[in-house]
Length: 150
Image 1 (tube, one colour):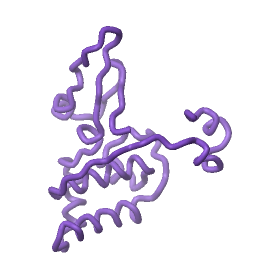
Image 2 (tube, rainbow, N blue to C red):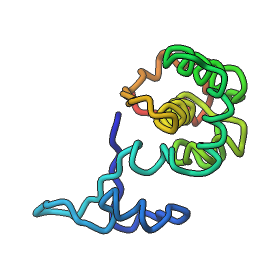
Image 3 (cartoon, rainbow, N blue to C red):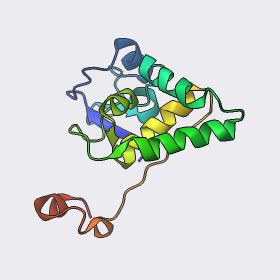
Image 4 (cartoon, rainbow, N blue to C red):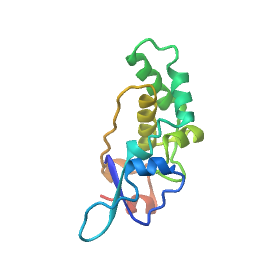
């Protein structure tokens, strides 16, 4: 899913104040029953203006002569150099943290790809979707598998 929702009590520690204001954190969405704050991946997690993301994007695309080549360089870096693993804090880590950790899974790698593209001026967006837990059988086991949504 391209958006996630958080209740008003959700911690947004580590997200700079300016980014929180740009994303509307603290602004309550109109709702008669409960207050919900909506955060979008590209506003908070894809921190393409972070210096580490800017430096990595520049490093990856310096010798590229076309947008296609820039995208390919970014893609291969995210696919090959960021080890597939589940970060301790799950999906809710920034692109800059994924670079620092050197590990990521599907969602965090997608967020990193988005941020690196935007850092070099390539328009990008990501569409997320739910995956049936049956597809993940064997990869996740025990309680983790049974706790997944169907």
